[in-house]
Length: 344
Ligand code: NAI
Ligand code: ISE
Image 1 (cartoon, protein in one colour):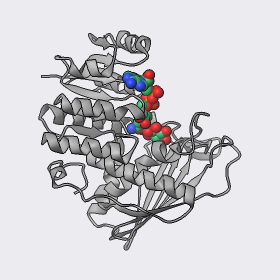
Image 2: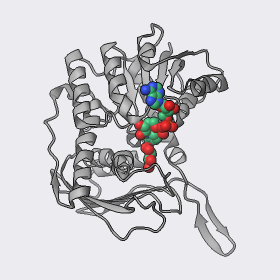
Image 3: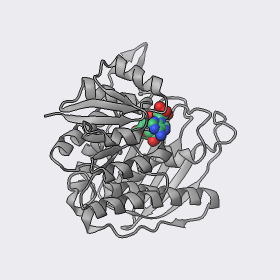
Image 4: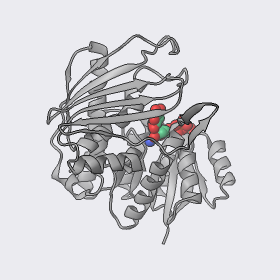
């Protein structure tokens, strides 16, 4: 049996997901697509030789009888409306980050799910499926380096477009660290401060780059996260956990080690598509498999809510320069039913 999937938003990541479902993964089939750019939606349907209907809007697609489950890959501000509509229609939904652009929006989704009495939502925090992060988490969970005290992390992009705003360094980029660090540590955040070093001459006038974000967790660990989106040299994700008994570092992507021209070298990847390819594949395969079983295995709407509350506090801290508290509601017991990748 194949899961019949409708995709809302056929831009960069929407197309990537459609390609992997069609060409790489199993048990999923794209039967419906929509985009405000209808020509683009039709073009990808043609390019992938899909037998899929192109709908005028996301709500029609959600209601379609032959659509079992929805993927939302449209712009962030549209996510909440489509996720709520999918829950109302009783259809499972995979939503790219952010779940909603405000904490209140995420809370409305959490409440809708609780009211429906069933998990419907998985959020696209794919790093939880990345083999390097999974290996790092297993090491931490085994206690090999003892109680984690500090995380040093870096999220570096070679460059960003002119349209990239200052807030995006948090809500678009650092949001991945917000999710992955609490998952790695089985902990939550209590405060945040941001500090700006000297700005790179490569950044647009409106953009402070790089930035350091300092977050404290409930158990007292400190996270020092560098966001540097004009680093020029490559796409580079770093994470080092300092524990009471040792240091655990995120494995580097496997690339060939060269000895040439009197040099010993290794390539660094240049984009997130290549860096997290296997994570995206594993994430969507798990979504398809668990959806067919009527389950949600991956990051939940609750994780989307926590990320939104935390990123709001990061934005506030960025403006004030002060240590800013992070206030989270208690996690509803309802979310205990999501067992595999969700923080227990
Ligand atoms: P994009 O701009 O390339 O594509 C978005 C598409 O959504 C566009 O084709 C646009 O026309 C369409 N769209 C916008 N409003 C719509 C509506 N109401 N109905 C139907 N279609 C609509 O953007 P991109 O890079 O594909 O990002 C999409 C989402 O995925 C964003 O929320 C982004 O943060 C997230 N994302 C997640 C990544 C990850 O690593 N998990 C990586 C890249 C993006
Ligand atoms: C992009 O939107 C993503 O989500 C990527 O995973 C991230 O690494 C990149 O920095 C963002 O711009």
